[in-house]
Length: 299
Image 1 (cartoon, one colour):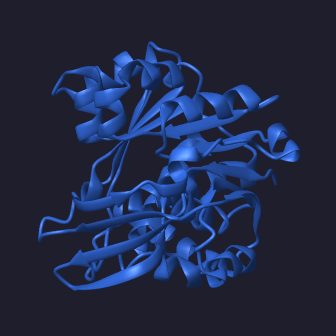
Image 2 (cartoon, one colour; image 1 turned 120 degrees about the vertical axis):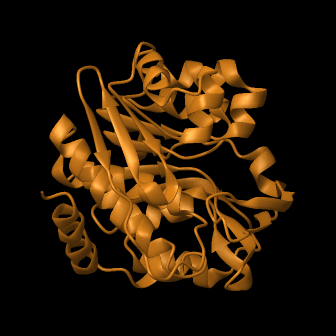
């Protein structure tokens, strides 16, 4: 088993959905991804972590076996406030406080530099490039991004894409980045930049995988209870890289399985607010849902 390294942010969130609200809950792209990854593999986290981040949150990382030597403890924690309407595929941001994210250096601890499996969460693409430059012999790097970076730093996003093996985007980001409504055309254009694979997330409708010669479609899980979709995409990416690290395999077949594992973990994330469900989620529960995914595709 290889260790997975997660890069992103930790945060304190205030979230409102049609099913309730919470405030000052642990969030951030690196948080969701690291908790998801830790279900499958030993995991290290690289992120800013404010001095005001409650100690109980750091204890949670330790309880889940996550190495926190890559956390940069300084200043105030990044804070995000948002809400969802009944169409819960898109969050509406009400307030963002960058705080220590504005000074985050993304310096890897020495032993992290030998990592082979890395997930670059949604952060400034210049920082993603900095992390890549510190890695000595990476085997598989996956990256995420968002519309803000595509709009304001598109050239940096494209430069980062050239240096990774897997790009993870949602359908809106894909269309925006490659300026086409056709997802297949956009995915093929992305592959010409250098990645081995592109995953396009379609929210509750699942995910699409494109490689040079093949494509794969994973379904969404039909949840009866959806309380909060915050962090589902990050959970997806973290579980994916954690599974690949655990199997030490990045073949097309392994990536397909990783997508289904990622979808399974993301579906659990949506069942409760913030990281609540990830705190107690077990590998056995994930395996059970993985088998349900497999049964959904039999015909």
